[in-house]
Image (cartoon, rainbow, N blue to C red):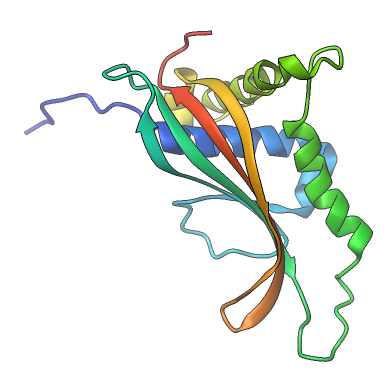
Length: 184
């Protein structure tokens, strides 16, 4: 028996995949140096990587599919291999550039006008997210109907210990409003 209903797109998943496509685009040719993961990606995480998690949503406009998600973007790389041992991969300039390119992408404005930041970043996320439907229609068809309506920066978090090892990470938190339709 077939399902009674046609599934609606998962807006949180759409946000994660669109933001990752946006970040890959921001890194250009350097994207091949990094791994990119969304929250439900089954792959084992391999540093250095960027991971996007959209969580804690609220309906923005009831019964429309519009939702505002708390979105956590995490950049992670290996810290010390062993206590007291230097890590040859811990080059601060490359680490700061890794995070800084992502931050620069989220800081785009039109003509240097800070008032255009949310619209400019949203338009770029839409462009990159919708391109997924063209490049991988078997797995990303739902991205054809997606609109990032607003992006708002919220907070940073710095390094922490994880799983018995020290990983260095940077976290940026945003609120992103999106919907499973093209409304822009």
